[in-house]
Structures are given as C-alpha cells and as structure tokens.
Length: 72
Image (cartoon, rainbow, N blue to C red):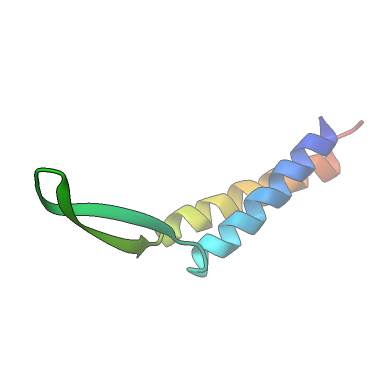
C-alpha cells in the first residue's frame, strides 16, 4: 500500500504540474454545419483549467507524504 500511494502521488504531482503550467492540451472538434455527407469541422486545442492542476498538486503531495510516513 505504501508503494502504491507513493507512485500515485508522484503521477498526480507530475500531471498537476503540467496542467497548472499550461503544458498539457487536448484536441476538441466542433462541427459548424453539415450538408449530407459533407461537414465543416473546426479542431482547436483546449487546455484544462489551472485549478485542476493545483488540486492534483495538493492531492499528489498528500499521497506522497502519506506513502513516505506510513508504516510498512
């Protein structure tokens, strides 16, 4: 359990850091209009809210600390 908490905490810390600094984005496709089989689509890159990164940083720090201080 100790090792799982540490690994989960480190992963959350890394993801939280990437999100909070705006280095992570995902594609979002929006269809403007379509006629029959033809469609006009626009693809944009969106970023998650920085608050999500801050939350992940906090939870990751808590999990890592619990993994370090927890008895085996």
